[in-house]
Image (cartoon, rainbow, N blue to C red; front, side, top):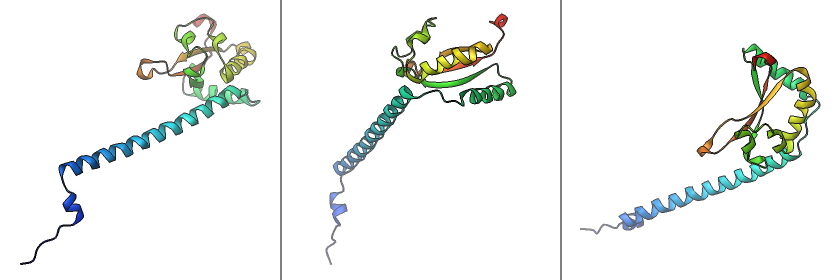
Length: 156
């Protein structure tokens, strides 16, 4: 009778070997997650830099008008015109969260320029603007939304 030989995989096969395989797999997945999170952080930082330097474009009025028309056709009395992370504000959105009447003073970057556009071009046309925290991931303020409304003053 001949002897049977075992392959290296069979000779290494043990509970310890399986646990080692599982640990290696978990480490690979953790490394992939860390790489993904690092890439997302870089992308978010780039978006924040763009947010700080972004200007209101000349076609802003026509874009807002198209958005409002679409909302009106859908039967809405308001439209979300702008959204950004609350942690991009100097106070992380606290003034908005606390319904502070001076919340516009806490704006920065494009949010400040968008608010200034509202004050100069939309408010004189009878529109109102509210800022709200749109979501609460992990119980913390998430995105801020600028909501344009066109209700009558007596409806407030």
